[in-house]
Every structure is written in C-alpha cells, then in structure tokens.
Amino acid sequence: MMQKKLQVEAIQHGSVIDHIPAQQGVKILKFFKFTQTNEKITIGLNLSTHNGKSKDLIKVENTFISDEQANQLALFAPNATINQIKDFKVVNKFPVQLPSSFIGVLACPNSNCISHNEPVKTRFYVNNKSVLKLKCHYCEKSFQRSFFTELD
Amino acid sequence: MNNPLYQKNIISIADLSRTDLELILQTAHSLKQTPQPELLKNKVIASCFFEASTRTRLSFETAVQRLGGSIIGFDSGGNTSLAQKGETLADSVKVISSYADAFFMRHPQEGAARLASEFTEIPVINGGDGANQHPTQTLLDLFTIYETQDTLDKLNIAFVGDLKYGRTVHSLAQALSLFNCNFYFIAPDALAMPDYILEELTDKGINYSVHASIEEVVDSLDILYMTRVQKERFDETEYQHIKSAFLLNAQMLTNVRNNLKVLHPLPRIDEIHNNVDDTPYAYYFQQAQNGVYARQALLALLLTNQFQLEV
Image (cartoon, rainbow over all chains, first blue to last red):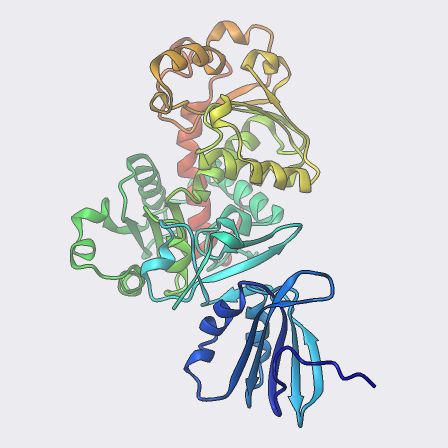
C-alpha cells in the first residue's frame, strides 16, 4: 500500500488547526501567543490542497484548544477545523464556529468610540449575513471584519 | 400599575419595544394634560453635559423642575475638573451617580451612555452620544407625531435634508418602522439616507421611496420632517443649484392634507421659510415644547414604579 506523506510532521498529543486560509497562520500564532510557549509547534504555510488552493496549518504539542479559543479562530479562519490528537490518533475533530459575540479581542475601528479610553472590554456582536459584520456594543456601529485590528 | 421601565436605562431607541414606546407617549400625554409638580419631590437628578447642548439641557432641566425634582450637574465638560484632571468617564459616573437618583448625560463620544450605565445602579438617560443616538429627541418627535395624528400607524412621512449625517432622522425612522409607516426620503445625492438604514427597513418589510423634491410627495403626506442641509458640505455654486429642492415655503402647502404637520428638530436656518410659521401646518415650536413632556415622561417612568396615568 502506498503511504501518504505528511506535509507537516505528526504530533503525539495536542491540537492541529487545519484549513487555515493562506497568510493567516502567522497571525493566529501571534494572536494565541503560541510563539511564547515552550511546547513544540510545527507549522505549514502555503501548503497545497486537493482543490488547488493554498492553506496554512498549525500543530501544537500538549495543548488543547478551548471552545473559547476555537470561537476566536473564526476571526481568522472561519472554515478551519480543529483536531485533538492523542497517541498520534485523532480523538476529536470539530469545525470552528462563529460565536454570537467577541469580547476583549478586537479594537473598535471607530476612533471616536468610548471603548478606546475606558476600563472596559470591547464587545462586538456578530451579524453573519452574506458578509461577516461586527457591531460594537458601545458605539453601535457595524464594520466588516477587514476594518478591525486585534488588541495586544 | 407596575411599569416595565422602572429603574431602566434609556440608551438607544433600538432597546425600546413598541409597548415601551406607547407607554412613554401615553405618559407624556398624561403629564401634558395633568401636571404632577410633586412627583419627583426629594429626588436629585444629575444633569451632566460633557459636551454643551443648550436646547436639550434646558428642556431636560425644565422637565425635572416641573416634576418637583432637584438638579445637580454641569453644562459643559470643559468647565469641570473631570476633563482637566483626565479622570475616566467610568470613575466620574461612579462618583456623581452616588449623589443622585438618575443620571442624564450628553457626551461627545459614541457609546458613552452605554458605558456609563455599566458603572452605576441608577437609571442613565442618554442625551446624545457623539454621532450615535439621541433617544429623547426621537421620543419627543414620536410624541409630537402621535399628538397631531392620534396614531403612529401607517402614516406617510417624508424626511427632507441631510439624511446622511442626521442621527435624528436615523433614529426616528428606526422607531417608526415598528409602526408600519411609509417613508419618503428627499435629500441631495451626497446626503442620502445611508445604505445600512435602508437595508434595515427592507429587512423589516417597510415601504420607502426616494424623491428629488418636496413637491413630488407633499400633497400625500401626514408628516413632513425637515432638517437642515448644511451649506458647508457643498461649494457655493452647487449649494445654490440644489437648495431649492430642499427648502419649504407656504406656497408649496396649497393642496396638502388637512392633518399635515411640518416638524423640524431645530435650529432651522433657511430650509423652512418664515411664511410657513403662520400656516396651520407649522408645528416645530410645539415640537420643541413637547421635549419637556417627553423627558418628564421618562423621568416619571424610570423613577416611579407605581406611577398612575391620568388619562
């Protein structure tokens, strides 16, 4: 039987985030502060897929992505899947789901919004029609995803 | 009766249901007919204007005094130590609200009233937050429409002037969409109603149409809501060319419905000619006066659980 060669080395325990759109992998590493952990991380950038498009992929040893983290992934990779690995086997696999709101992860694009200089967490409500829009809890303005920057 | 608005915040018109709106309008009507000069006796209301607004402040503070309440506060943020010392709004609200029974505020930044409501237990009333919301203006507009038409349902309402930047028309259109009205929008292309408002109306199944001049629709209207086209948004030649389509004079009201009322949030400049003032259709000064009753209604409902309507 012909063995399929993995593009990124397998991990024993941990999480695999798959189907990340190309160019988003590094952003996700930074956002989740995976670069500050001592765990082994392997990444693949611009990997080829069977539909001809490129994708990124992240494998993190000894780390299991929480539901909250999985929801936040939707900001970068709405079609990503998360695989939980134990002893080199996939024991759980689930798609990223858009939450109803994002709390404390994005800055409001409206520079006159009160959330910028007060002791509150930002909050945006998801309006998922044809295009993903997020509405600010405070200033009530809606913006497309591309207008947002992530908070540090 | 127990009322559902007792101790609630009034931040955004979108937070209010049709039932809430009707209760506020009935209460405003009742207080206009039957003054209650003792209702807020021993209540202290904070009136905090982090940004100056003479008309809204005077109207609100009159409302408090007509109900027998007392006022603390300031008329411009720049005059206070809060701005000079760089205190956060959250801290200012915590301190001031510990002195008062309700907190009325105007602030130059969007979202300020929502944020304030998260740092106090007393009711917060938004008197305008930047370009976002000004719900008490919307309530006085609704009350005036209700008072002059005996209903809010299925009215023909035209909005004229600056429909792009005017938060007044955005909030009023959103509130009236609960009552199945027909909307006519009349504005220069550069100041047209924003797409997101039109999308909301479409989603709610509301009829609306866009017109080039007041005269196209004026004869079939119940309410003509005028706003100012700001001259500074155009060059002089362009302004002279477009302005005639968005100005109202008495001659244009020859064949209108008897129940038509012309409204305007004021101040007006030249968009309503003085000769309209003498027609039976002019109602903008009564509208401004209704601001006192609409704000009295909110205070009565937020601070009095057992408030009895005298209808």
